[in-house]
Image (cartoon, rainbow over all chains, first blue to last red):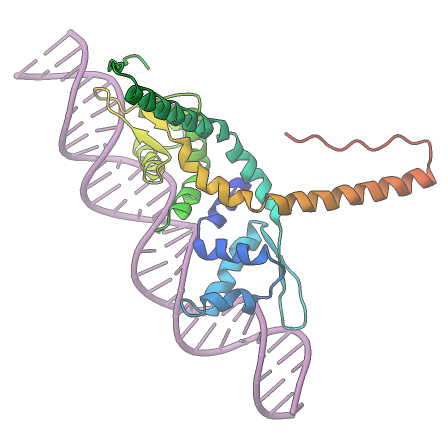
Amino acid sequence: MRDQLSLTFSALADPTRRAMLDRLAKGQANVSELAEPFLGSMSLPAVTKHLKVLENAGLITKKQDAQRRPCELNADALKDAAEWMSHYQELWEASLDRLGDYVKTVSAAQNSTQPKTKKKRKTRKS
Amino acid sequence: MRDQLSLTFSALADPTRRAMLDRLAKGQANVSELAEPFLGSMSLPAVTKHLKVLENAGLITKKQDAQRRPCELNADALKDAAEWMSHYQELWEASLDRLGDYVKTVSAAQNSTQPKTKKKRKTRKS
DNA sequence: CTTAAGATTAACCATATGGTTAATTAACTA
DNA sequence: TAGTTAATTAACCATATGGTTAATCTTAAG
């Protein structure tokens, strides 16, 4: 998955890895600390692999402290992904507006004695 | 990949699919229209599969118009993912602030040694 | 009725992903 | 030195992903 944006989204596409980032958002943690919530459901090498994915995506960095590997979140690596998504924000906000309009319309219709009927129109021609 | 957030991020983790969403952000398009930019590099069934991924993630919907399948963006499906990422925004802004502080520090140091030099201009963002 | 257009499905293949257990490395500790 | 702790690497396995070609389906157009 060559491009950076794909690497980022791919790294986020796993609940274990997102939980690890959530944990790191509260501060540094070494591997066994990060692993602790998951050791009931997966092994330590599996955790190592997840951390490798996050590291390759640039979302975390590992330091060294004796045998420990304190991991640190690099929230900056989320910026490009967030920016990509922000281009769509106006679109989903627009759809929320349309929902709001619909709610208003229904509400108005209920209040009126002669509700306006909406014609259903078959729209041709994209 | 059971949970919705993973489905969404996973769907976004491919440049072809992101390009398709970008196209759909400009309005409806049927499958062959969406496929057109990629037919030099992949077959139509491959396009169908990508669209299936987007559809399963709820990011697009397909209608029917004779043999055509006009696809529509559902930007709303990005909201949860965007919200998840927004929790990290303050963190990367904090790191930018630290960068800003660093730049100021360096700049101040330069000004003290070379009082008449112009301030360094920060590189623009896209 | 036959053919063409638009798209999907089926069958298949190579590689990636997410997990395992066992072995190994690295650094502290008794 | 021997043992323990923290983490990684190796080898392996099952399933998912992203692609292919060939066949199929559906609807429109001759």
